[in-house]
Image (cartoon, rainbow, N blue to C red; front, side, top):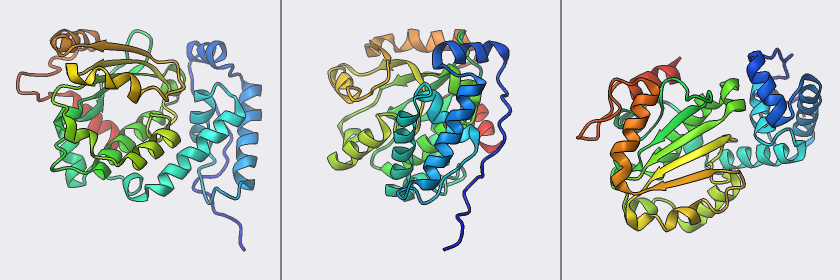
Length: 278
């Protein structure tokens, strides 16, 4: 049997982070050059010797996603990596051949189902906006949903600044109804929660979540997030707070228009599309 041709090989890491971000990584993630180099070597050796991993990226940028998310606890980072690869293998149609020009994915992007707001907040974090209410459960499938999440998170997690500083997730639940909750079978939902730790499939360093749900969904939200091992500050607002919350986003990120009365978004999704294509 010949040697494995890894998706990407091991590389010599040159840290692109600013001095400020490196200090933040040291203080919050225990990351310094020595710790990082040793952890990367351990991760690569473990992947090469792990019979359950058929192939993987070995470049530092990819492996640091997991190490930073787990604060350089190598065994925990290894477990997260294996779960990530397992979920991608089990749901192969949903997490492979990701293409934003595919009709359904492109339409969901235009609708503003999931996207990152341009710029960063006062703590240097990217803000991810989710609007599940625009997802038509009779038109789109759970594969479409997984694909757009995969495209969004994969694009964002390539940025090392965000790997350290994390993300804020802003969820607007206006328009969500029971059919949205039936897109996945209970077994599929449990598998995604177990292997993706409620962050689907990516080591997303969630720092804060702002959720706007219809009143009848408020009681469900804590249970949906109960398996998340990360320390997430969850703020629940009624649907009446939607206008004020969207206004805060608009002011915080200098957007000429975040939304309009018909639910469309202007400027933001187009900017994020450019990020994905680039």
